[in-house]
Structures are given as structure tokens and as C-alpha cells.
Image 1 (cartoon, rainbow, N blue to C red):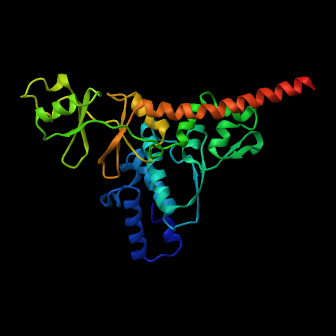
Image 2: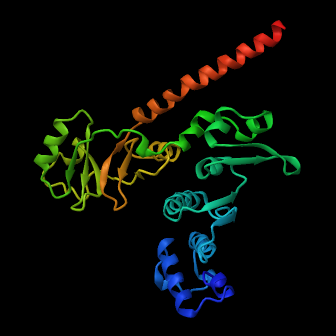
Image 3: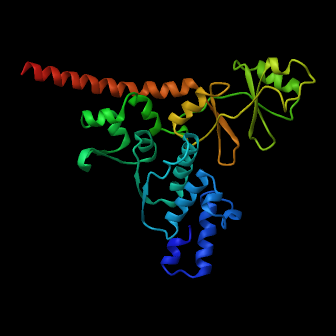
Length: 291
């Protein structure tokens, strides 16, 4: 599949094989999968292969028609995040077709909303479309909650992370308890020897000195990266044990914690813009009435 276009272009076997290996690594597919048939792959793996095939001949422009439409929501979110990271590397112009406005807001630098007979209802940045829809059709297409949708336009790297007491899984109980006493958080985040998040522990989890830190508390699984958008981050926080998300770097090493207070500040910062726009619209309507 990945080699289809290079073969059509007459590439020699060595060049084609090297390009296939390069692309499999780029999209996160182990090279041991290179000789498998599509039926032997998961839905997410098939989608990655489709992306690799599209990039095979290094085209300046790529057309992707509903590339993540055939996978479950969890896999789709993961593939979207992976693709956004990949786009930072390949830097291609991509025409991305989707019927999902949330996906368009998350993936697009500019969005063209089409209505009946393929007429363009609005072509603009995601920010402009959310804050200033061209007409009722666009407003209805966006749906409710435009302020929340705007969180998709900001990433974790745009906000400050909260300080949180951390210790290592190999530290003793006394050290962890001291960390807990010196903070008002109530919980300590335990890291492994590679600085990767391991577990959340509270005072009740280590009351007894014989309690193993490797098994105490709850696993720290609500993980986000700097490129994660705040909409997805908020969803991760809502479903997490501590109501917060742990920021890690590309190697999975702990960088900080994103909490509700920080995200709420971001939402509140959007309100003055919306209030100003609403006032302007009310003034215009009032002016029309006077005339």
C-alpha cells in the first residue's frame, strides 16, 4: 500500500523500500508490520498506513477525505493528535474534508464551510468562525457552546501549569509524607526513575509504613502533552481521578500539572471579547430600530 505511488512513478526497489521504512517510522508503525495485509491491522493502524501512502511521493499538497471517519472516537482523538504532531514535521498543505465541525476546528488553520450546492457559506480561521459566524447557517452548523469549542484553539503550552508536590516511587514513606505536609494539595504525585508519572497518593494511602508505594493510591493516567488542545485536556481532567491532567514531554517525563483553575482563567479571558461583540450587535439592532 505505502509503495503504490512510488512504483507508479517508476522508483527503483531500493529507493521505494527505504521510503516505506522511513514513512512507517514516521507514522508510528513498527517495521515488522511492513509485510502484513490490511486485514491483519487494527483500524487505527490502517488509518496510519493511509497517511503514509499519501505522503509516499512527498506531494506538496495532500487531499484527505474523512481520514479518521472509520474509527472509534477514542482512536480518532489519538490519531488526530498524532497527525497534528506529524504536520509540524512534514509541513504540508493539506485539504482535509470532514463533516465534523469539532474536528475541523481542531485540525484546521482555515475552514471552508459549504452549504447547499457546494456554495461557500464562510471561509475563515476557526477563531473567526466561532466568534463571528457569517450567517444563521454557519451559527447552526457550529452548534451550541462556541466558547467551549474555542478551547480547541489553545494548547497546553499556551498556559501556565500548576505547582504540585512530587516524589519518587523509590523514596521512603517519611519523605513522601513530608512532601504532603508541606503542601495544601492533599496528594503527592509519584514519579519513576525516568521522571515519568506513576501514581497519585494521599495520606490515607501511606498510613502504614509497610504499604508499598508501587501499589499505593491510584495510577496517574490522565496525561497530556504541550501540543494537546485545551478542549481535549478539559475532557481528560473531567474523567481523571484528581480532576487534573499531568503534562509530560515527548519522552513522557513529568513537566507539570494542568488544573481546573487555569483552564477556567482561559475561559474567562474569552468573555470580554464576546461581551464586547454582543454589545456591538445590540447597539446595531437598536440603531436599526431608531431609523
